Amino acid sequence: MKTLKTISLILFVSISLIACKSDDDGGDGGNAGEGLVTAKVNGNNFKSMEAASTAVKTQANGMTTLRAQGSDSDGKGVVLTIIGYEGTGSYDIGGGANIFVNAVYTEANVSDPTNSQAWQAPFDDTVAGTISISEDTDNGVKGTFTFEAKNGNDDSMVNVTEGSFNLKFQ
Image 1: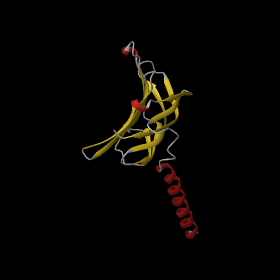
Image 2: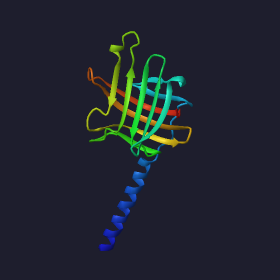
Image 3: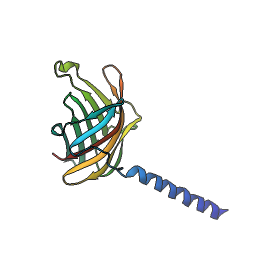
Image 4: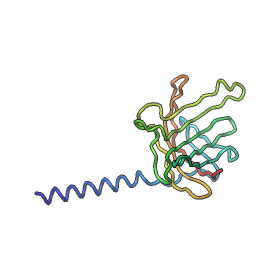
């Protein structure tokens, strides 16, 4: 009976480690063209302009921060931030006290900037999405993302799916 318990424990631990491995890899990198951020926002296609898309990796106080962003010609944009960035892998957006990984979808109103809107994730203590980094080189970063975000002005929600980025470092 003791042998059966030992084998069961080893099998359980092995399966747990294998299951976690897929969560820790950065995925396939998505399908964004070079220099772009793409996604579906509430089912509508979003594609940034190359001139308005970039990634920045900074270090301060022993911590690395990655910021990836892209905007289109209509003033719509996506900003992804990972504070405590450790390279390729998956990062949950939110979840408990985790506010160090966040995502924002914006719609700027050029003719009336005070009417611009922003949807933020996380917006409560649950996991609101994931940013997965599949490639990080000296030149740039590639990955995928998905998140649900809330507008602080009117409590409306946006669902951002099928997101991917392929950005050069600034």
